[in-house]
Length: 432
Image (tube, rainbow, N blue to C red; front, side):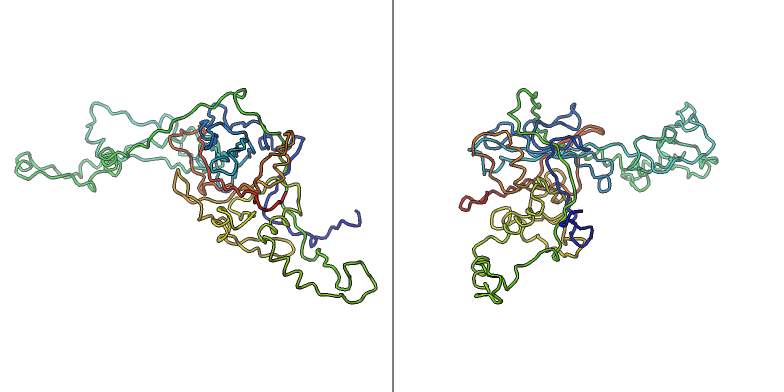
C-alpha cells in the first residue's frame, strides 16, 4: 500500500450512480458498447430505420452507444436494450432530432409461481368434456354445468408453463342443479308481455362481457409505416468502437479535502504568519463570474475523469447547465444530495415531470442514463480534424412502466423512441 492509499471506508463516499468506462478489451458485458454498429436483441426483429434517422437531414445516424438494460428487480421478464444515435453532419448540430434514442423490449412468458396440487387426476381427466348429442346447448351456454378452473398464478422468474395445468378444463358437478331450476313461462304468457331486454346480471359474467365487447369493439390504432433496417454495408461510417466496463461512483469524502492554510501567501512565503488579504473579495468576484451548475458538473466528473457514462434508473441527472432549454425543464426537479461519509442519497429521485410523457402508454418518464464529454474523446479517436461533437451531456429519459410497443406479439421485440435531452456547449465560453 502506497502512502496515498488507505483502507479506511471514511476516505470515500459511494453513490448509487453506476459509471461506465471505455475498454479496449472485452468485458463481462458482451453487448454494451460505445460506437460501432448496432446489434439487436433479436436480428429477426430490427427496428424501423425511421427511428434512427436524423430529423434534419433524414439520413440514418451512426450509433453513439448501446446498453444492456435488463432490470429483473423492477421489470421481471423484460429484456431491455437502449440505443442512442447521433448525426455526424455539421449543419444538423444543435438542432432538435439530430440525436435520438430507441428502447427495445421483449416480454418473456410468465409461468405459474406455485406448482399444481396433486389431485390424483391424469392429464386426460383435465381435458374439456365434449358436447354430446344428449346435452343441450342451452345447458352449456347458461352454466347449468359449472366449469371449474385450475388456478394459474404468473411467476415472473420462471421460463416455462407446467404442461399439466389446463386453465380451460371443466368438471361436471356431482349433483346437477337441473331439478332446482324454475320452470319457464308458457309461450302464451311470454307473448302477452312487452319485449324485454335480457339483464346482463342474470347471465354468466363471461357471456355478458362477450356481448359488451362484440357490441363496441375498440378502434384500431393507425398503422405506422415501417422502413426496413439496412444491411451493414449501407449504414453510415461508424464511430470508434469500445467495450464498456462499469463500477459504482466513489467520491472523496469532505474530510479528504485539504484547504490552503491561512498562513500561506501566494508568493510562497512560509515564514509569514498572516496573510495580506483574506481573499474574500476575490472569491466573491470569482464565484459571480462562473456558472455554478457547470462548475458542479466539472467538479463531480473530475473525481472520475475517465467516465463516459452515468447510469441510475429513476435517479437524478447531473446537469451541465441550468439556463438552457433542458436545464430549465429539469432544474426544478433537481435534488440536493444528503451526504454522509459512506453513502450519498438523493431525494426526489426519478422526477422528470417537465419532459413529455410516454407517447405509447401515457406514463411518466424517468431518468436512466447520461453520456459525458469523455465519451466524445473515445468515439472520435479515429476522427480527423477539429470539427467534432460539441455537446456537454446527453440525457436519456424512458417510460417508467417500460411499456411494450403496440401490436407486438409475445416473444417478439418491440422498439420505441424515448426522450433525449441534449445540453450543448456554450458557444460564448470555451470549455473544452
